[in-house]
Image (cartoon, rainbow over the protein chains, first blue to last red):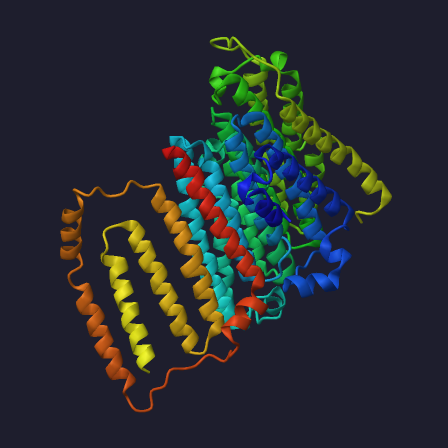
Length: 460
Length: 161
């Protein structure tokens, strides 16, 4: 559908005016949210036989795909709203919409395919659209951020392609079924697994493969930062990890230990690095590395509870990190800077941004009863149940670090004194305010609603 | 056999051009050309799966990435071109000899009695492979081309305007 809309929007002779592009994309994203939320309304559900005959390829949606489609739709909608509030010229907005649709088509297909090569191809489609989106401002920092992302993405691509070649050699095919049925003890199969894991870790931005992430996140335009931090990194790296290591391959003890170590180190290094930042967008970028570490830690448990916790934290992180980046966009627009030393007392001038960012950061730190608390709790309980007491303690202690850097951010930006005082602070643009309220409400509802889910017994 | 020899010669020339050319963009085009010829050779070796992957990735996807990266760099000026060409020729003078040497060695090796290249098992037609089995990948290729086109418009055409 995003591909069809892309074609329609770019028909010759201006059949559709550029200003309609925003609305049509918004409606498409709303449809995706509703359809994935209901689990129906998708073409392959309505006419499964004709779909296959007409298009000639089979898509494989399952519950994990639906959760991902919902998260992708929501984050892309928020990114679109942020773009409406921050991008000024109509041409820039139109370019943004086109590239967003390409990234959307790429991400949607990633979560629907059941073939490793197609998955890799659409990971690269998404990455290519993002390279251009990050450089949309054409500033020096943006070009530098794009360049780092481009180079490390190419390195990840080499790892993944080599792995695919080895999989093809050992399994005779690259479909998930062929990979799942392969002999796990084969040397080339293990080598391919290792190489593919390295590629995924670069795409996920986990320590020590995180070099590109802070620059790309902080230098991108606000709406692109929301998309990148909210969903793209996670779909291109973490989702693939969830899909392959949670469902396709059997997770061995050595792989579990590797994932636990990488997750644990990322949590601590990301949180410590976030503590030392003066630029709030860089602080949020390092915080993302730390939070992705929690998801990998949950996956590293190797138990169904750990996997469920990882998926839940994946969803929650997409929501609260998008919220914090939308707040960052709002602050950057008003203050014209992202340096926390030059900001202060914004709580009184921007009460909505102050309140919603408080909800977002408390959820990130895992304070009850917000959504982030429950997903972290599930991961910690899974770690305890699996006998991983050290990693569980590490996850708990790192939450204190998270709270520390976010409280410092809150104090410096919303309560401190502004030096020198900013003369004009206007009202938060409507679309950004709407995005802030929507995401904050979801964080609250997700947290409070989870209590009822536990009581209903669905979770068990 | 004659077609294979022509293809192999063309492959060697394309490889040499890729390495020896001074302009980065031409080098990328040379790489794409090398991949296309290699895909045909792989297909002729009865391995359409590998040929399709080579064509999709090395001739389609990778050059788009390289062109995007090259677009961020400043092209070499016309005044600096002769000096760069001379420097390149001096630095890589031995490459053509290596290529010819390897070619001769292989031709001797191929004529050894009993030597036979192992053929791949998959014998599906490349059209069937691309259109019936990997149609989704074609959509991906199309999206990559579109993204590349938007990249050129957004980053370069509008900047010039």
